[in-house]
Length: 83
Picture 1: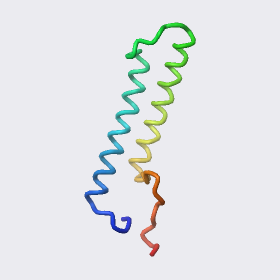
Picture 2: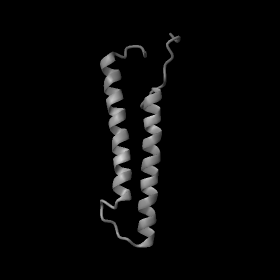
Picture 3: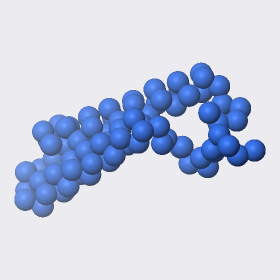
Picture 4: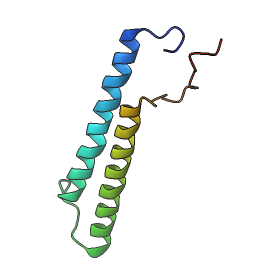
């Protein structure tokens, strides 16, 4: 556990991490089903699917990192052995 990091902080980080995974995967689904009613022109359809794939890929990647416990949120990762 990081120095000065309480169990409450860890739970909040974990909750926020999984919440954001749901947001990214939700955005991927909304882009895939054209929830925002973008034009069906070939260019916009390609852009919409590109966004859907990007949101899904990042949501899966972030979910993997949450399960592995690698969420640092821009802070340096501390080892238990360091001072």
